[in-house]
Image 1 (cartoon, rainbow, N blue to C red):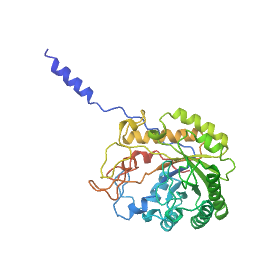
Image 2: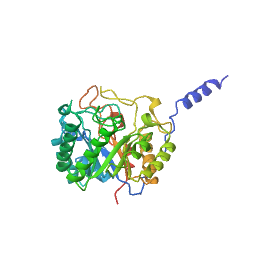
Image 3: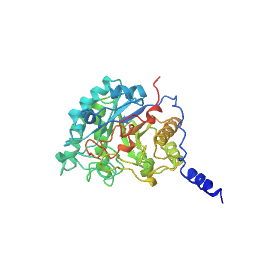
Image 4: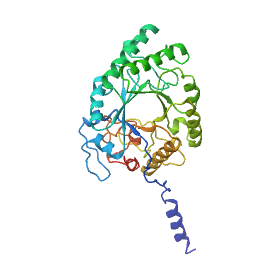
Length: 355
């Protein structure tokens, strides 16, 4: 019995041992374009709050920092007429100029809405509410032409996550003639106004993607974009790989247009986090800085091995507010590339170094 206390101490020590962390592979050496959706950065930069690299040194120029880490494209969100000026045409055009000056390419995602557009909502701008199909087609043509001429992006999306169409109800996929006409109108406007721009159609997830793109063969576009979040689209990467290989039969280069992963399930600001439950995680990757970096490395490797055109991380600069505050916080704070002290996380060290 005299050994029982020692035995109990050993048991307790073992029970408190940290969970094993996934190994983070060295950076890949393949030439794979990497994008970051950084739509919120101008608003954050305006606050004056510093952001730090891994050594704790303040980053003086975020765009240059990202470029030097291997980012090649900055993805920007555009809303038609929003109370949030960060996503208006004037502000987005100014940010696009700064992006180019930093040696990065501009990827523009046009939501054709005054707010978020995704598979669950595709609300037309207030200015277009109640239009019949002919005036709506004309509005899409004029607006898209104006945007493409003004920004001349390297990549431009017609809609965002248009699984069920866009500009509802007239542009729903259940109204295929209208949907396809509106889609082609947007593509044609880009092609005429900015011939050097690559046109992307963006679908959320891989399930149903083959059917969707097989039925868009008559649309004049250049790139397929797919969103991939394991908590929404499934955590079986082997199934994803199979779907990507099948989708290549469409004959268009494929981007992973959105992905992300948490470095923690905790929170700092008072904004509700979008992802915060253990059952939302991929079983191979814990919500830790190392787990986030390893998940990203896995997708980099998968994208390179499947000859994808590139990969984009969504919301890497959607940073946490100060403790107990809401603004300028984010429900994506635990999926960003910087921790709650605004210090760079290990995921930034598995970005590729440009040749």
